[in-house]
Image (tube, rainbow, N blue to C red; front, side):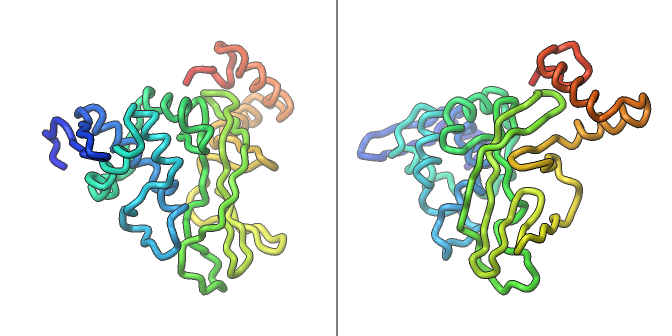
Length: 244
């Protein structure tokens, strides 16, 4: 799809429909950040490095509502554009895009890191247990609602996606895997959002600010927590400005 394309056409259901350039770009942006959500419900034999032929129903419904077209046309436009979209890295979302996720996506478990909501996945779709021989993507999924404490936006609702390996009975969470009561944290950098309890995460920057206050000003952890609670209600307080 060339950059000077003014519209994309579809003849779904024998009715011509076109996407404007802005709609085409929105279509691409939204789907570029939903690749894991698109891949997860696909049959296990579908490769994850190629765009699947069919979008999951919840994705089609969300895109149709967000752009204002029929689901039949979403399917047709996906057929035309899927390879181009799959080759894209996740695109930066505008504030308007994030509002579309909040308005139309939350009820389907589709949200992105916004003031309103977010979705957190394990870092891989595959089992990383070195003693497990499974080579196929993990498909058994459980999603739970959680809350996330953030520095700039206060407390936000979120979804935590858990993946389960049927071969070795390992459950994968965004921060760690669990097998027979043993938790193993994922390799790599410290995650942006850190699990601090059941269904609760805290943003790394917020934790760093608490540590700084405790080290520099001898503020207790309890008072850091109290200041944060005040900050989520008062935009002029130290923690949680309340602005997105």
